[in-house]
Image (tube, rainbow, N blue to C red; front, side, top):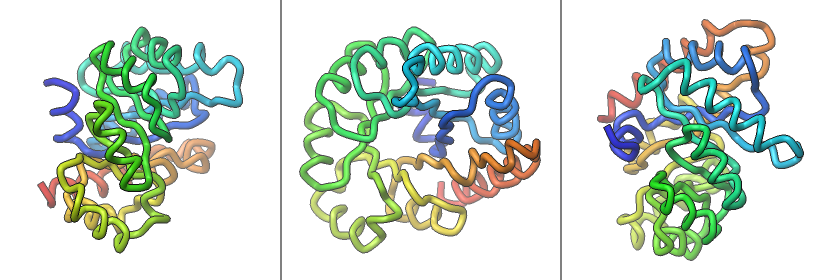
Length: 216
């Protein structure tokens, strides 16, 4: 299955920020047990070793799961990071902003481009530059009134909601026709990870995927 079809089918992307090594693998196991099959491993831009660390994480996840899950890189801010992610096995590139160089390199390497945007101008610029899906960020802060208004003139652009997506509102995003969501706090919960409570992560994952299937 190609990457866009995989995203379209599975929709929920777990955002993993500053989770490494065995904790990341255990988290991925828990998510997969709950039927979530996509993880975005972010570049920690404050860490000078972020390219090496993120690459190691993506490679480890790909080695463990093969084609059963699909992994991408997040907080990608330059072409060098796109190349590093691609070499590690990433299938999609997610950014918090619209950067022409990042989108161009992503498409050049045959990966799915998901830049982040907030305004109608940013969304349409990303689309024009070749983005496959535009990440609406921060979706929760913008609210459904804003979303309803922008979907009128730009309903042709595939959107992924990121920021503030929960079990309570995920169904609403699906009703609005969102192609997916990036979810951090509820699925990459640092308290659960520290406590070793991966069963709770699996439980939450199942709820999100039950909602996803109900709106298929």
